[in-house]
Amino acid sequence: MKSGINIVVIGGGSSYTPELIAGLIKVKDLPIERVILVDVPEGRKKMEHVQSFGRRLIEESGGSEFNLQTTFDLSQALRGADFVLSQFRAGGLEKRALDEQIPLRYGAIGQETVGAGGFANALRTIPVALDIAQELERISPHARLINFTNPSGMVTEALLRYSSIDTIGLCNVPITIERTIAQALQVPADTIRLDIFGLNHLSFVRHVYVQGRDIISEVLTYLKGGHSETSLMANIPEEKWESYVLEAFPMIPNPYLQYYWNPDAILKKQREEWQQGLGTRATQVMTIEEKLFELYADPAQMQLPDLLMKRGGAYYSTVAVMLLEALALNKGREMVVNVRNRGSLPELPWDSVVEVPALVDGQGARAVSGGSMPPEVKGLIQQVKAYEELTIKAAVHGNRNQALAALITNPLVPSSDVAKKILDDILLENQAYLGRFAQ
Image 1 (cartoon, rainbow, N blue to C red):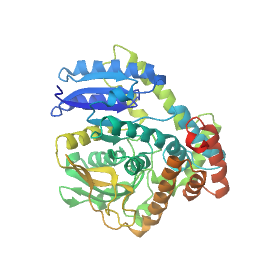
Image 2: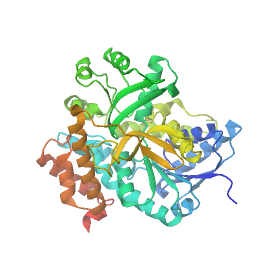
Image 3: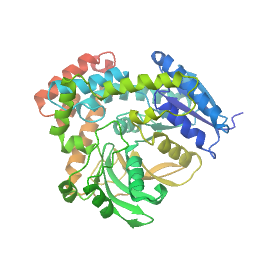
């Protein structure tokens, strides 16, 4: 007879997984019975290292008793699941590297979640995510799916549009901004509330409340002094916003806004690194991961290595565990998540996915109304949402015209001619993952 919560981790061989295990170990009021790691056979060695290291972490804790299992059988893993955490990468880091390289060939920014790189990632990932959801509908239809898989906003919207599974999207950027502010102002993190609105990797903080008092002006003064809100985010370049930007837009921009607002500088940096033989961010991550898995395989390694912070994903386990607690224990916690809009941002489609504060409890996550978006950023957000909707349709239906329209609509693709060339390369170099386009 079942006595506790069963958690399934899709993409269990990820280098992030030990951080998640460490976070679950620290939870004392969540009755976890077992955690099952699932991956593809190609990830066997990595998942074995993660499992052995995870078991050492559990043993070292001296208190946790949940069973850490692994399998390549998705159906078997999903049987009896209460929560499914999705963190897989379709095509691995090798395809991520291509996602970053292809746009650079044609003078466009190469990045794994935004621009043409994020588009390629979405085309590969959305069909796999929907296949997983279909299996979950068949085996454990009442399980909740927590999506970390990038591009998180689009994957979450596809799951909510094309499956019946209760899905919530997560990103570590909002909590990183929150914790960075807390450290800078030397206040407890749990006393801070962020009023965020927008999309995943395209959001803005317009109010920062500490015990009910709005301190956004103090935070903006801090940022105008040359400080950064991205100091803990290894996956993207650190951005120190110029004072004139924060005067024109009196909000805290998501650090990914640098790709939209400073594309020339970003593109120049990416091309210089490529020409110098440094590769793209994926190249750097491959080097970091190789060392991480060596550490995970070492029987003497009994705690999370410091190197993990260079991988990116700060506070990944923190936000995941907070969400699990709120859902499983009916805690009624407000969190910034990716959920159905349902009027919280009236300028965006009702059934689209937005990144906003939501009330999370045993019933799920419900967006808190954010009101109208400021005109300074409304147009950009609406344009990117249109791109996202077209990309999701293209991925689901394998429609080349919708795919091309999506790329042309994306503000980080410089022209229709470049969009066509990028799309041709993406479809050619991802044939094994894009079978829907061949139908």
